[in-house]
Length: 202
Length: 195
View 1 (cartoon, each protein chain N blue to C red):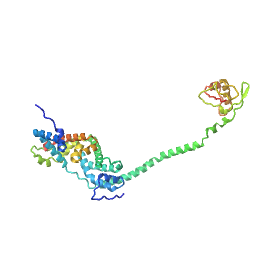
View 2 (cartoon, rainbow over the protein chains, first blue to last red):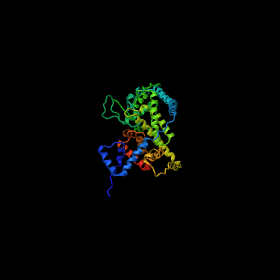
View 3 (cartoon, rainbow over the protein chains, first blue to last red):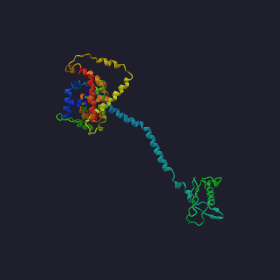
View 4 (cartoon, each protein chain N blue to C red):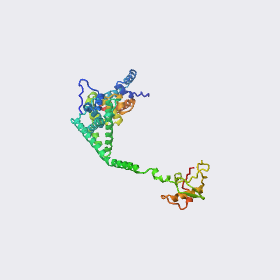
């Protein structure tokens, strides 16, 4: 037995008048041949009419009054919440402002690096190097606690002495420590040299 | 803030009203409320089947419009925007209710008994307006899933165009038409003895 084609997907469009002429003719022919389906379409029309004629629900008389009251209340709450937000942020904002002020004050009061190392411009007292006396400006000696760089062997020479070797630098280093109040002379300068950097400029 | 009353002979469109409201005319908002409160209540009531909750949702809808008035852009119809807000709020309310119902299942049996109608003899034309009263239709609408319920209400109760429904629920037009058709067929199946 051949099963008739299902046209139910077109029923709503038929009811809504959205079918094309061709579709409508095909569907109407199908419904004429199938009384059960025709009745189904009629029931769908009745259903739609019933839905359209459902009684509207009457809104409360005080609906607008309540709405206005809620809006007014919201306005007040909105203002209050702004104030409360500002109040809540008052303490942290004061803390941040204080911290910024302290930072600014200290940054102005703190002496500059040139002021701290102004003694570098003073010449290191004479050091005896193998019987010879020489003066090396203290500004030309830089210390760091990382490593020791010996001056390059082929560096440009502008001075009068030969390139100092590690031994010479060791002596100078010792001398520097000996003449600087703020630093303590290391017990073993040879070890300390490994963590000191001495640069020479000639 | 005092607004200027519109010329009664030249009824302003929804979009004109919201534009005026965005510029500070609170009277325009009153007109929007007056224009939409009844149809939104019908829509939400059919969705929730609870008048009190429906009215709360409609109130909240207008509050959202008030708060978010500057979020509305005239790329869509105002009615689409406000129905979208109401629909979203109604769905949220429905979810809350389902959570509440997890703790009170005793109402289910009583609801079924309220609409018992035993009549094998009926005249379809007669029963359309008498026996098939609103409660029966509403009961069957409630049994539909949310996605079918909202389209059938928007289409057959509210009388909106398919295109507008597609924008409100943000699904393709073809999907809306398909859902409306399937919702109608389901309702017809359930209510055919009364049709």
